[in-house]
Length: 252
Image (cartoon, rainbow, N blue to C red; front, top):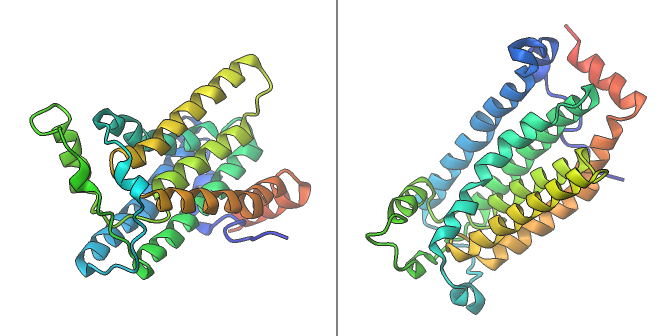
């Protein structure tokens, strides 16, 4: 038994699917990236600003370990690599028609996850009160990086960490699409995992997230993958799943 939210393609994709060979065969990729901008990035920003305006705190998850983890200025670089994960998934889910279908459904489920996390930000807001632990960047070349980050993100994007949720979802889908069947792929998988581990660590060491945020994000993503995402992606490999997708996408 598994969840089926977002398992059927949305109507907004129909014109893109029918004309998927346009834009050099990349119309679906561009449609996904535009959808992520308008249906994920903009709503997230609005919720982040709303939580900051309300200034309400549901609970405080701070532990001594959150305080003791050392601040490492250069780790903002792996933190910002999150913005490479989105185009990676949208671009690489393109090896065949089944993968294109999975690409659309995966991103639908990714969007739904984002909306659920935004709801948590509203209903159970937590302020990330760690930025006072950032020291030693004043007057260095790292200072504008942190000014940009703190200007873009108010400290109300706590749990579960969307940085972790979304990056992990992309890692899982890439590993699903491209299993380690060759030496080259094993190397690429290792590089991907190293990048992801650095991203996860960066959320703590640049004082953007609590350990609670990371733990809940990993739990949410793992459960979502096993009981929701993967079963629905597998269904698109079946004749029934393919037929249902085509009927919905080719309807007038």
